[in-house]
Image (cartoon, rainbow, N blue to C red):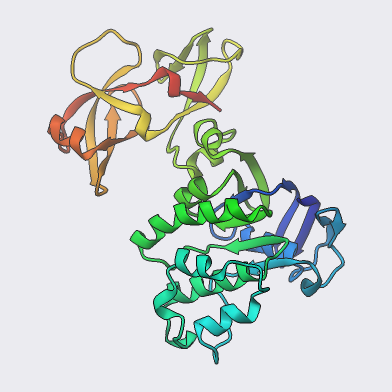
Amino acid sequence: MLELTTLRTSYDAFDLGPIDLTVENEVLAVLGPSGSGKTTLLSTIAGIVDADGGMVTLNGTELTERPPEDRDVVLVFQDGALFPHMTARENINYAATGATPIDALIETLELTEVLDRNVETLSGGERQRVALARSLATEPGALLLDEPLANLDAPIRHRLRHELRDLFVSLTIPIVYVTHNQRDAAVVSDRIAVIHDGDVHQVDTPTELFAHPETPLVASFTGNVNVFRARIADHDRLEWSGRRMCAPIDGRDVGQSVQFCIRPEHVSVVQSSTNNPNVFAGTVTKSVFQGSSYNLTVQLKHATDPVRLTLSSRTYDRLELAEQEQLRIKLNTNYIHII
């Protein structure tokens, strides 16, 4: 178990923490934008950056004052530093303890074809995969990963998310996985910590975090782009831009000003006229093809802020939607979340 207790550090004008996190034998994804403190957090855990306060503990042993080489923690940076004079095979074998199933690592990370090539001839993605294999071959007590899939082509990245998840589960060690990619975080992790400006804003399971963000910042960074201001109108009603609609109020006070969010995939298009208070008329102002889906921006007649929704390509084609198309959308009550 990896424990961070009021851990903090600072440099220049940036302050990290204090941060309190506990990572069992699980994958904790640290999700945040560039400059949020993700890499600084990893470097502080690994001992590369000195902590100004707090503690780092691994399996009951305090590491805070120990040098990096005496922490039983492996940190793999985004560029994956390797020995340039060695082949990929030699780099991996250099770190191997003898007990780790190296062949399985090589197969999972798709390295069989490049094992006997000098690392200087490898692509950025190949070097990153070699660095990951080498780090796992050391059998560390904890593994810290800084954007391990960042340099990979989309098809390989998509597949490796799932295979890395299976691999990580088999390791039974604390793993901290830094990324700015929501899908990477959701697939590989048991829990996600959202970090911004050096502070952790929410820690939760991927399902809970994406469905019930605690702040507008967490909502927007997890793809919950529909965030609106409203007022509690009744025990089961929100007033939004002069319109009342159904929503799970969860004991909020009538008259209270709130913000609510709903994910784009939970906004639907309805074709028939209805008296449902959660159905609104609007105009498609933007339509973006995403391969298997379309992202639509709809300007409602009653509201200033547009609503964004995601439709499958099949649904989009069936509805024959186009920009400037008039339509009705429904904000599904069960998926409205009050922040």
